[in-house]
Image 1 (cartoon, rainbow, N blue to C red):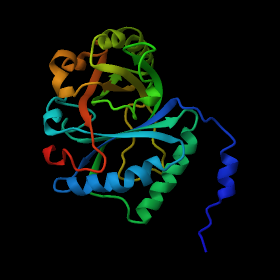
Image 2 (image 1 turned 60 degrees about the vertical axis):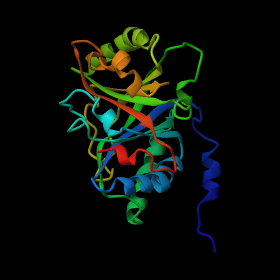
Image 3 (image 1 turned 90 degrees about the horizontal axis):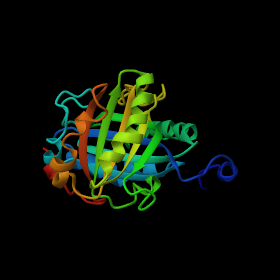
Length: 277
């Protein structure tokens, strides 16, 4: 006899609520596998958790994994980061888009499924969450205007690299000013003629109180912006000419807490695992 899955409820839920394609929210999670557990972590995440703990959930409609080899880790700034301690920590990054207006629905499911995965011993414990935050989408700035992939394509398009950037303003009002400055002035100028096709800008939201204990509460909820730069070239190949000065983004009133380049993983393989240390 098959297990009851309440299929009728699924049919009822499908007929209500938003179901657009805009990435209204994101999950951005940067993780450091413990030394000696790199291969085991990579296989667990790719073979099980990416699907059972993410893509199989309602309203999480796109995802991509990224990796920072030691060469890329050494490009990170600033040396003293409020996000990564040391700044090289967090060699794997996963990014996911969540349908606009479905954040609360998704969060109920993700808390429930992670409790189930822990109960079923399907969680790899030999890892540290350096940065894990659900985020609300604020803006997307495109290099080529209406031409090219949109932000909802970004995690499926074969981009060659990604830069995770975290910027802190002095306070909530200053963050609004910073966002306006970035979106309308600085990001368009920096994107012009660069290998970056777009930058998506998010602001972090608090994690629920019943989150897993190994994931720390999000910092900078009122002051922080998280930027994802989607690159058409390997970041190592174009870093000195285009991205080495990203730690000055936002000017003197903002503090850049992390600039971290990544390249995409190759699903189903252990490519790059031997280049993390």
